[in-house]
Image (cartoon, rainbow, N blue to C red; front, side, top):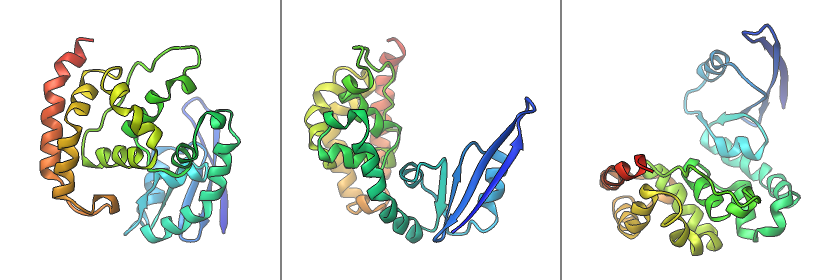
Length: 221
């Protein structure tokens, strides 16, 4: 394992520090990093390497990247500590094991996280407030992450339609109404979508049609 502590001067003349750690074929960045430095870091030997926000979250890093096979091995290493971290958090007592596992190690994006925290709004908004903006899936990749959440956390699936279909805005209401058709289309087009394989052109077209039909109502909220 190799680690380097670096820094850069911000526009206000302040020094911002960050750490780069090379570990088993993966690169981790801890701390704020200027976009120019990030481009340089990822551009040199970036062939066949990809960014992985889930691994970064598990390792408590800002960024993580590497070859897919190295990323998967790294996730195996960080899975235990990530789960332990969630279990020691104040909200753990209100979550079942499957929810803890997803928060720690699940594939997360804006829309899947919106589902989780909207159906669990009492945890994030203990003062009774509701989330004002619930991001929705824009493409089959987003949809896939949402579907994995619902498959992996039954307690979220149980509340998905009642909550997201009524409390998360017109676009989500339309998506929930057509959820069965979206899933069936995706399964037919890309049966191996859970493994990141296949294309889902018709699914994307259907999603855009549903979203476009509901957006005028969203804008009028």
